[in-house]
Length: 322
Image (cartoon, rainbow, N blue to C red; front, top):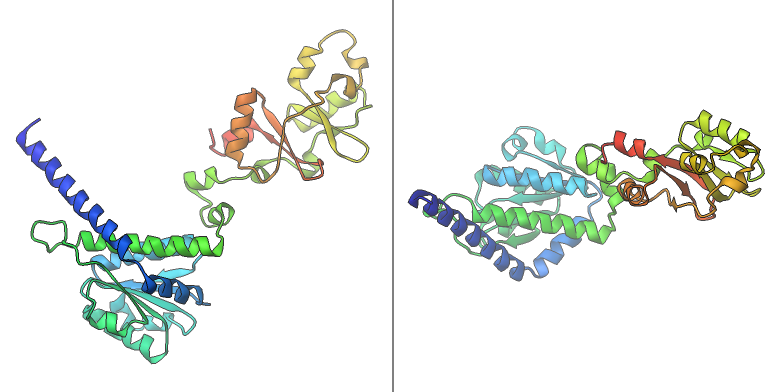
C-alpha cells in the first residue's frame, strides 16, 4: 500500500469519525425543543414546507422527500423563488422547516417574515443559537457546536450531516407516532425493488372466478377439467360451507397415477393438510414458504378458512421477487 493510499484512508476515517462523533453529540443534545417541534408538526393540517439555501437547500430537499414518503405531506420551496411568487405555495394550514447553518441566510428573510406575519409555525434548524432564524422560529433546533470535517473547518460537512440526521429523526418520530405501517409505506413506494419487497399475497393472487375449486365428492374427471381450465396446477377442495379442506396438485396426480385414478373422488386423492397463507402475508414470505416446501402454489384463506385466492410461484417470478 502506497503512502498516498494510506493518507487517503486516514483522511477518510478522520472525516467519518468527526461526523460520527457529531451525531453522538447531537443525539445527546435533544430535549424539549425537539418534542415541541414534533408536536407542532403533528398539529399541521396542511403540508410541511422545507426550505434552505445552498448545501442546506440540498439537505432540505432530501428531508422533504423523506417526510412525504413516510406519511407527512411535504414539499421543498427554494427561498429565492419564494421571494418571487412561490410564497403563495405556503398556506396558514402549513408549517415551515427552515435550514441554515449560520441562521443568517439573507434569502430566508422573506419566508421568515411571511411565517411571522401569518402565524405559520416555523421550525428552524441552525447552528446559530443567537441567530435571526433561531430568534424568529416558533421552535429552534440548534445543532451542537462541532467542527466541520474539512481541515479548514469551512466546507459544510459535519453541519449538513447533522441537519440530514435531524431531519430523519423528525420524519421517523412522526412516522412511529402516527402508526405508519409497511402497507402505508408501500402505498408511496409502488415502484422499484422496495415496492416489490412489500407486495402482499393479495396483490398477486388469482381470485374470484379464477379459483380452481371442487367439492370432495367430485370425480377426478371433473377435478382434472377444473385444473386444466384454471391453469394453476392445483385444485382446492371445499366443504359444503365453502371452507378449504384439501388440495390436489399436479404432484398428487403423479403419485396416484394408476388405472383407477379417474374413478376416484377428489376426497380420495386430495392432501387433507394443505399449506395455506393469509392474503395479507408478504408475497416474498409466501415465496419462501413455497421454496422451503418445494411446492408451486399456495391457497390464501381468510379468517374463517374460506379460500380467497391462489398464489403461484410464476406470479412471484413475474413480479421480480426471485
